Amino acid sequence: MSAVVIESETTTAKPGLREGAFGNATTLSCRECGHQVALGPFYACPECFGPLEISYDFPAVTRAQIEAGPRNIWRYKALLPVPDDIETSPNTEPGFTRLLDAKNLAAELGIAKLWVKDDSTNPTNSFKDRVVACALSAARELGSTVFACPSTGNLANAVAAAGARAGIKTVVFIPSNLEQPKQVNSAIFTENLVAVDGNYDDVNKLASEIAGEEEGWAFVNVNVRPYYAEGSKTLGYEIAEQLGWRLPDQVVIPVASGSQLTKVDKAFQELIKLGLVEDKPYRIFGAQATGCGPVATAFKAGVDAIRPVKPDTIAKSLAIGNPADGIYVLDIARRTGGAVEEVSDEEIREGIVLLARTEGIFTETAGGTTTAVTKKLVETGQLDPTLETVIINTGHGLKTLDAVSGQVGAAATIAPTYAAFKQTGL
Ligand SMILES: *Cc1c(COP(=O)(O)O)cnc(C)c1O
Ligand SMILES: [Zn+2]
Image (tube, rainbow, N blue to C red; front, side, top):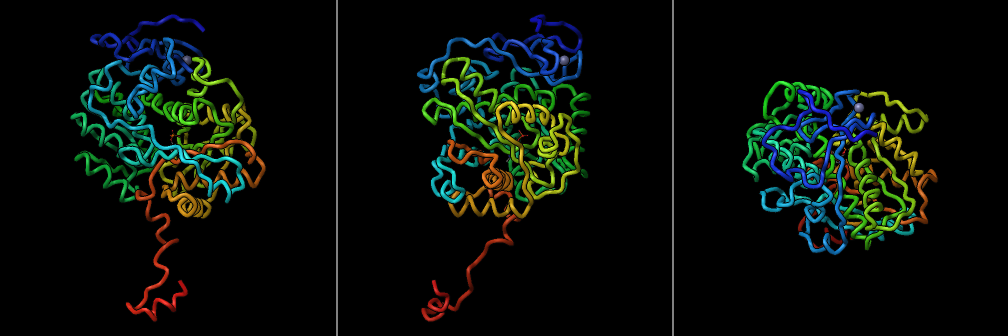
């Protein structure tokens, strides 16, 4: 791979970038051909149109330095494309969510040691606050005037909230059929919620078009996507740190675009290279819904290409029919000895109830998918139940109440008398 930074009309860093705007990040590198581009609002390789990813020149980073940092993702700022003074800019301060020892769910699934990384407790109740915090920093450093996104819901919530705190104009685009709670959870933070008559892939296409036309708009998952995506690495860092600076044997991660899964793997690799954890084998598993499982389908068929699908599932936050990072998810699942599995909407509902009844965690449909896939992976012998396993709960059930409101409810309606109570048998 050449280390040449090319300078052309489309890839020159914006003048006026301050020194250290992106911390220890050095360039944007093409994941397909290795071509390098100067840091700026770029996401596609000018040579081959492959996705660009942040490269770094990391200084020596110690466990003690990280542990002395704040109890949020900025404790890992040396490993992110953010400036050293990031903590002074208003943001949502997500991260350092609990890693829960899930003994009851472990017993239920027959897994020896199981942890739930519970990202439903982030500021807007999903893991998206992590990626948006990094995107906001990039948007600021690039001098963007509008903070925007196409979203399946959670991202819109996170963008609208972070933008409100930062005092930057936000515009969020969602598919018009999105769950009502996710719409309200955005509209409460911004007046500029745009419902698009189409599915997520249509919304995404529109956003790319707007990003190409409108000066100064930072679309977190489009033109500042390389910076945004790095935020997911903090999930991997936290899991390792919270396990006492070691890697788990197996991780189960939900897959929409697939970005999060690839970044957890990147985080583990970086920690090994930096000597912050011991090198050891680990397996990464992806979780999808049958109604939108293009990566699971390709995995099972043993093929490299992902055929886009039209999503039809209650797991709307995972409903990306043409996942940008799908091929990299396949690579990682195969390289690490993991798998990508899918479950039906009925299994997703059961997964939500299972996690709630065993661990007291109310997850959204994405977490129901991850829980149900974990169960299926054990039942089909793909996940080794004797190995230490972490599953990631990425969102909160209060945002997808409709998914389970038909499933659970009052045990009985009774007259306010002791006799009527006794009749319930409780
Ligand atoms: C966005 C999202 C995901 C998946 O993220 P990708 O990085 O696009 O794969 C998983 N869970 C929830 C709740 C999400 O909102
Ligand atoms: Zn390229």
